[in-house]
Image (cartoon, rainbow, N blue to C red):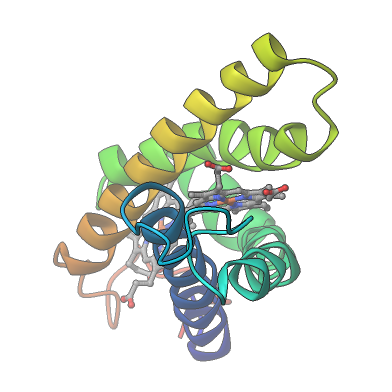
Length: 151
Ligand code: HEM
Ligand code: HEM
């Protein structure tokens, strides 16, 4: 990935995963002071809005790198960081679809299904994103593995 792509991926993931995790903490771990309060934490609606508003940034980041990074590396059987890259590739659609599915679910069963899917896919996404980032990459300079649009 190029420098700007990397910056976009890291920034969008910090914003979306960060708001998602704080929102989860408010929903499931915080006990409201007022037992009749509609939300567990006074900032819960703001966190929900922030999560929904930041979410397209991750979609944009992946779309931006799709052809040059994700698809190229899969298509040409690039060996480095491949397993975690494949996991991210597989998790991307379920994570996005379940996020939006949550908002348009028509009944409890459908909502619960999207919820499980969003939890599992986004939890694993964070895990594999961190591993994908931390694994040593190839030394591209001066080798024939270098793609022309890489930095
Ligand atoms: C990357 C890690 C992510 C984490 C940790 C995360 C976490 C969460 C959590 C905890 C919820 C609330 C579920 C509930 O009601 O109990 C949620 C809802 C939602 N997420 Fe995510 N999410 C992530 C990524 C995404 C992405 C990539 C998208 C979309 C592209 C997305 C879109 C949404 C939407 C639209 C909702 C529904 C909000 C609502 O109506 O309450 N999330 N997410
Ligand atoms: C949706 C899927 C993917 C995402 C979001 C993604 C994201 C990223 C990001 C953000 C980096 C930069 C890490 C850093 O150094 O700070 C990176 C590097 C890398 N990724 Fe991926 N990746 C994906 C799929 C893949 C696949 C499928 C492969 C291989 C088959 C792969 C192989 C690599 C390699 C070799 C590097 C280091 C060299 C470079 O920067 O291009 N990735 N990826």
